[in-house]
Length: 305
Image (tube, rainbow, N blue to C red):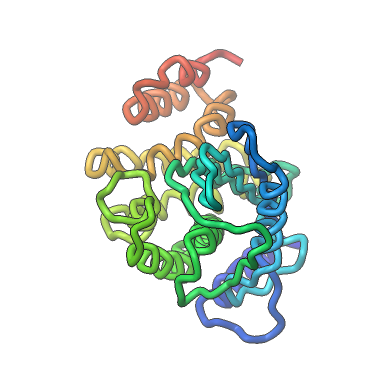
């Protein structure tokens, strides 16, 4: 596939997501699910295996949108539930969400999400079916799963097309609205700045729109063009990153910044490992301003190679 064909393909996927094409449908995610019950003692472990199978089938067999993808185009992601409490069919978990996408014409995959949700609670009775109902609240488990499916899709599509994730973030907004109609944790606005409501706001509020612009430039105009010339592509990434300080000064507590750090810090260190001394210094200062506690880790940017 040529570069122009690849770009055209990305635009078609974005268009299908927006207009709701009703032709042949296919699932969007290739999701690995892990239920870690090591903290739970003295109970039948089979329920955790059943839950893992149920969530795996739900995430991989559900058509979350009208986007048509071939099997090789499905988005690679991982959901790891670390169960901290379990009693009377009630689960309390920390959920680690990860997603990745390939970089154009290379074997490299870049991390898009590597985030931890510490407020996941739900009821699940062994062998209960998980039913996809995007406009109705079935239970908290499917509501959480739907939210993260849409978040994964939105962030992925934003990396290919400017504001390409709009349709998916609107679907995620619906999940937040449904979740807020309950007393379940993680949905309520202003409860904390890292919950699901805060994540949605970070991607739909006008005040943080520049982050999505940076995200597109970083991936589509930067990483994806490394094959055409490393120096030019890295300069594009530098220009994209240089838009972050202004956003940080306006919304320093936004969940976008821990999300960006966990997904991208190691990659940024690697990108600038062979940059000029000036580039190294500029990016080091930029990142240190946003992440002062990570000074030792960021020192690697300035190392000679």
